[in-house]
Length: 230
Image 1 (cartoon, rainbow, N blue to C red):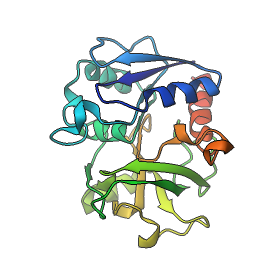
Image 2 (cartoon, rainbow, N blue to C red; image 1 turned 45 degrees about the horizontal axis):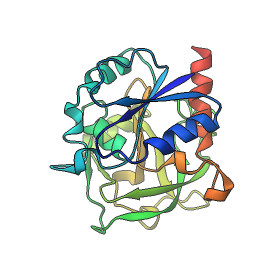
Image 3 (cartoon, rainbow, N blue to C red; image 1 turned 60 degrees about the vertical axis):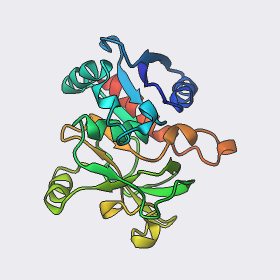
């Protein structure tokens, strides 16, 4: 399988994502933000970082990058797209995912490991997981406070679009296990089709025990499994 990793000015997790893909014995290539086509890839990753310096809002300028037109076409064809941290913010700004991102409730940058509950294990990104499985994955963001109104939240739940929620090591979900104030403890969502995922935690940083966890691998394993069956 061949993964395209979109690189914007200010991306800083692109090499991490390439390394993670190669750890899974897959091919990966960087795709510059000015590229016209992503048609030759099986899956796309929008990595973390500070695209265009996060001026205006995180992801607000990156949504206008030339490559985003082909990313939208790629997604419309049902191919898997994953946006991690800043990549999630870009997908929201581009309208590929619903909702918005606010500054953390603490108004501070947070960098630490968190626990995630797998809420939907039927997507291309979670099919190797068990529903309710707990993953230990790090976060590193200042604007990770996912927001949507009650109507949209009801829609997300009805369509099983909530992929991950912040929890404790036993799976308990409450305000104390919510690091940034996100609505419904949401850490990641998909689009209605399920082929576009945005999540604030960094699975590419949880690939080896020496890094603190290998739980991020299951997300890449799920995508690879999905692609092999297409």
